[in-house]
Length: 114
Length: 114
Image (cartoon, each protein chain N blue to C red):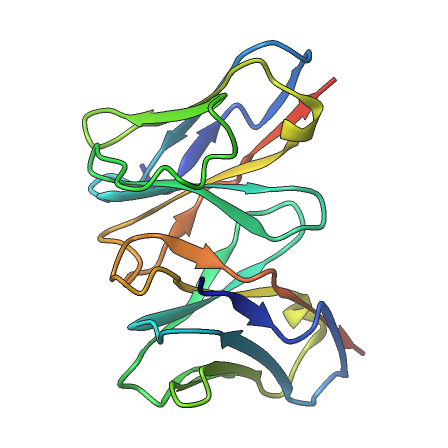
């Protein structure tokens, strides 16, 4: 596609439910990043993929968070048993190679846990 | 561990003046450093990338410098305009291992006053 697409754009969920957030990167981009941004805060690095592999998962806040990427394209971030502190904007970005090339961001998914 | 520090949370300047924003890192110098702009409710947008062997890079009214001795990058906006008001983020690979873990500073919110 023309840009990075994230869905849904907004998600309200009840505490304890599982949610899946989707990211469609720019076609051909091998690197894909997930970040979290709480209100008025900076971007918190969660995980990145190079192809389908995620070499470093240490940024994931807890074992309730997981992510996968299939076919070197679409990625899904799953949060199990959501908590109120998970409420934030989840941003996805992709780049053609990695940190030495510019990253293109999606518009984000605003997650609200009630 | 490597930390990224941006000089202030907020910076107010008069229209027409030059805005200077600072990004400091604490340990090893990254091979690349990037600057992004973020408007409220939107994902960051790439502005400039500078390599460690480049002392300065320019794009229209923007200028970035990279001083590996001071472990600092400066971001300048000349002839600033109210439309330049946004949060500006620097980003780099904090692992120093040439990984793809692109990590962002907390950002500086710039307000250009007419």
